[in-house]
Length: 460
Image 1: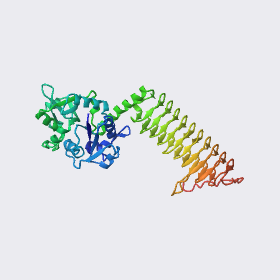
Image 2: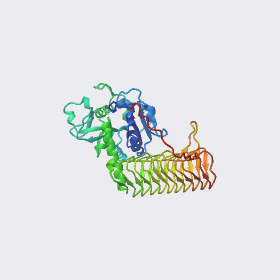
Image 3: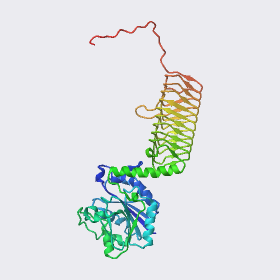
Image 4: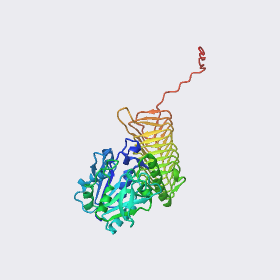
């Protein structure tokens, strides 16, 4: 089928009570619009047009501009007006146009494919994706005649008492022949209680012109749930969370408490990995097999090898963690950190833009930044690479088999040669040759028979 897609993403979302455009509110760490774009991408459309308005520049950052054409709805005059804004981008397109909302994060490509196939099979001029719900409040109701044919849609505020009892709702998703769509949008008006141009009015126009109007009921009504406030957003995130977690568990991942585990759909996790409660894994993270993650750990846009252990309360972003690495508890692994095979990063350790060599250990209370560290290095507790002079960042190089004593300050730029040792409590500001011992601390002085002055208790 020759298919184009129009996604309506211009709304303010007043009920969200937010300065953020509605479609950019996130579920599992991703904007709602991203889910819709993913579902649409799987349809292989010829063109994708996104109608933007409120926060347009921010909305545009969500997707690849090479794949998307953006058009602007400068005034919020209703869904019909929003759809008509895409006319300029699709004027020359001949075929079927799928129209859907950008705040439908639960919609799946499978349901959209079935919807489009049904539209084509019945040679409909206009098809509407509908749903049967227990509570239809707030939704447009589908009006059918005695033969079951769709004859119109009535919005909640315009519905009569009888019409409000209809349990079939309009999802806001349409598939329309382009030859009919633009002509129909030019004929609708704003004579309603909202003084808006309703996209739904094209259904009545099609019926009056004896065109084929097809109503397709989606199998899972959750898929067409629009998000209007933060309560609905929370519900949507729960549905998405279960979809992701169920898929991962069926693929061989263990989750101790899936209800309290949050993982983005694009995350990949290998077999026999265990995820503990309170863990959030987002972005394009990839985790290998036989890893143990959490509890209460945050991982984002990072790559893990096999056999990695991340203990409680760690925060890891944009990092590369190789095989059989141990991290935490309470560790912070910052962007551009690379932890090689068998390394150990312990409690209250921060690693930033550094390479930690194979089998090296940074076990306690240390900061390692802008550092290249060799293999089998031991970093004592309280060590700091002093990489920032107030203006520029400087590099520290620690070669293989170095032993850094506790509470050492390494003032960059500096190089500690292979097999060298630093004494505990040292401030090292010059390069340390291979195999040498560097001590940079004041000589200890002992004063015998020292007596402390008595406490001054005056005024107490």
